[in-house]
Length: 232
Image (cartoon, rainbow, N blue to C red; front, side):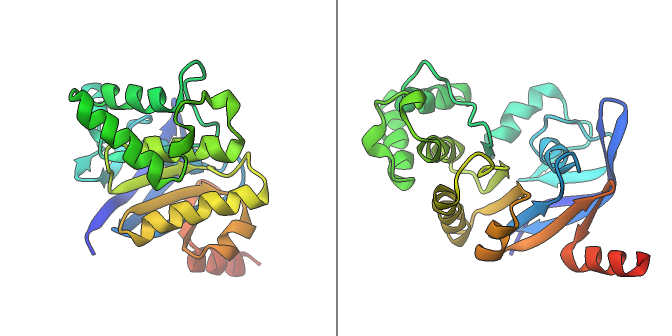
């Protein structure tokens, strides 16, 4: 399997404040990886660094073939075309239909062929089983349906990597399971999924590699357990 994400000795800052120190992480293609930790532990900061919202200035990191060290703003749109990003709070355009939300995302990432755009929109909506509601605006959809649209938008450029930040945080358990089944099916197709969560029920039910974010550091699950034992 090829390496999709590689981080070496990276310190991640929010403004001038270091949030995570000396992060080392490697993720292969097709892996399903959980980032677990309390709210404020740095999970979102790590994801933001990976999709270019926080610029890396100390250490090394690469994702989808892009070097993240000191990445220039003009390079970020090209990086994001290679990634699918799923947010907890949906971030859909509330005044436009599901179809128009996808159309906007395609135009923003350089699509021009209207026929190809139309077909691509319907293809990804069918993949997440919400094609039949393409005409509705987000406010007419349930939370689970809106998150399916967000996943469809994340798939619009057929990315190899999906970054999901608490994608089930606002959903009830039944709908959470539906979204998780969808994300896991994408991983089984070969896409790399990195998902931040603090929902341990999900982690137990839908198995994946577990990375713990705590006390300004990033651990494998076994490493975190060893650290806790040594401190006891």
